[in-house]
Image 1 (cartoon, one colour):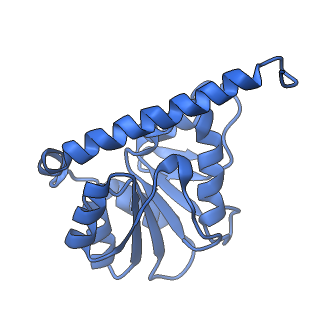
Image 2 (cartoon, rainbow, N blue to C red; image 1 turned 90 degrees about the vertical axis):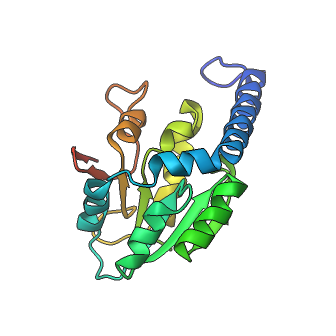
Length: 191
């Protein structure tokens, strides 16, 4: 059996299964290395990424922000310290526990490939160096899910701040076909 482009559905099923296996291995790695990761990233300065997200949101503060791939909670704590309602999401159970303890924020324990997010809940999504964990074939779907969880104000789909590396992933394999999510970062704007 094949689809309109001649690709085998069996091949697609294998790709999805492989994506889930890769995700499981990645999450297991972060669970094992959680303390070392925290020690290595606790003091990283990502203030330009914070500013990019906050400057792009058109609602009045305080904002409701989803920190996608929140890790141990550094960014959650920062957003909360500014008075925003920050919610984290991470697949690593170790990171979820660390983030809850460190930030005092709600943290969802979910794999990026199986997220269950409310519609129109967040003013923005902060994805700092996290989307590179999403397999290429899954990225359009994940970005659409993130768009749907954003409040639509001024621009369909809310706002998202991503690290420059994550922005590059949005165009991976698509020379002239941007994915349907507005991105704004310290290095530029893409829509």
